[in-house]
Length: 318
Image (cartoon, rainbow, N blue to C red; front, side, top):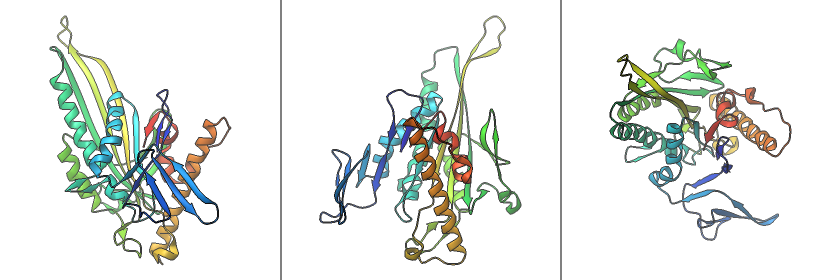
């Protein structure tokens, strides 16, 4: 979904991506022209659901062209942003967010375009003015309600992450490694190393099921400067900071169908618990927008606490 709390005229934008084309004689039908999905239910008959975008037989490039570009613009406008994929295990969330070398997902495409836009802006700068930028990244996973730093090679450091909340900083992970990057290639290399540390397992529903929620954070600072003619010193005329959370959620699963047991069963319970808490927070936020006074239970799970600013703050979220 897309939530814009800062721009008038923008509400909640819900997007659905079909992993494969819906069968013509199946239980559901898709109308991309009207962005609707019709579900045939034996007990209640035909029911229609409307969305802002329905992607059927879309490539990662096409999905990014529609959704990713608006997030990129938000980053340069100084807004915090968030993109996350939600769905059943094996539905293609990691493919959409990360993709593969021949069909990159939203995260690598967004990072590449970020640096391309920086270069374009520098080329257009007026004489005597300068654009200074800094891009920093963090990468973590939430596994069994523990936060693990995917940039850390130390198990002791990796498993000792704590969530903190500061009046000015907002919600953050204490001690997380933050790396400065200078290109999309830098980010790709770091993500490749971090992905090797992610927790995956084989289930009856997915041969490489993600057993954790992965959050890749990009922090962007842009400053416009000029040289003061009297002092000869560089002066900052304006500065914007923004942060984008790029989230690859673990998939919800029915234990009977996935066939998990032991360690994987515990993982599934924690995954489903945090996804239920996420749905509960979103429902409470919707009630607030409808005028109801609600307590938003952000602290029920690490996932909802970390995404607090993205879900209910001054943020734009897909």
